[in-house]
Length: 164
Ligand SMILES: Nc1nc2c(ncn2[C@@H]2O[C@H](COP(=O)(O)OP(=O)(O)O)[C@@H](O)[C@H]2O)c(=O)[nH]1
Ligand SMILES: [Mg+2]
Image 1: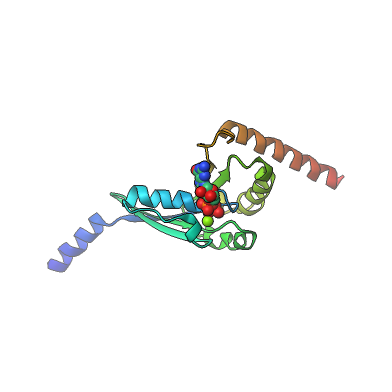
Image 2: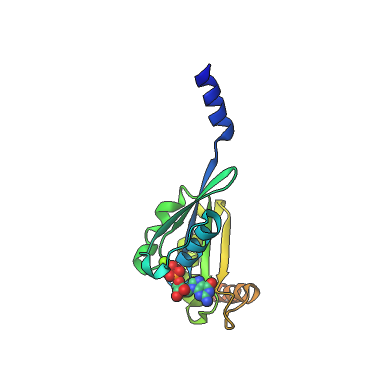
């Protein structure tokens, strides 16, 4: 009887676990974001991102859910491992440095080639985070969206003219 009640209690109080991957170019602010999330929800002081390696992990326990965050690193070499996490993730956060306009094109290339082209990712919620909004030179989410649309338009045009 004890085991039955214990099992029932565990079943009723168990928390569902979800994995969220945080990706984007190096310097976009992924590690800072994850450390802030940890500080906010776990009530522990976040570490200085400069003292953390290219990847970072974090677990957040909410009343009925456990969220596991994986900051996978954005350096060129690290991007090749992102796809290994796609199969098991429940959501993706793609972080953009909203003030680094010079790297928008590189960011969209990586976004299109490593994220949008992966069928598995298209079935999970995807957040495009326009980070560093606290800086005076950052672009708004609307401006970033327009930049993506222009970039995507050019890409499709070049692909069409390349085929002709
Ligand atoms: N102003 C500002 N700086 C940020 C923000 N997020 C990250 N940074 C800075 O951007 C740099 C790169 O951040 P980091 O988290 O290491 O980027 P990662 O390579 O994507 O993990 C660091 O100097 C951070 O302090 C933000 O929201 N606002
Ligand atoms: Mg980092």
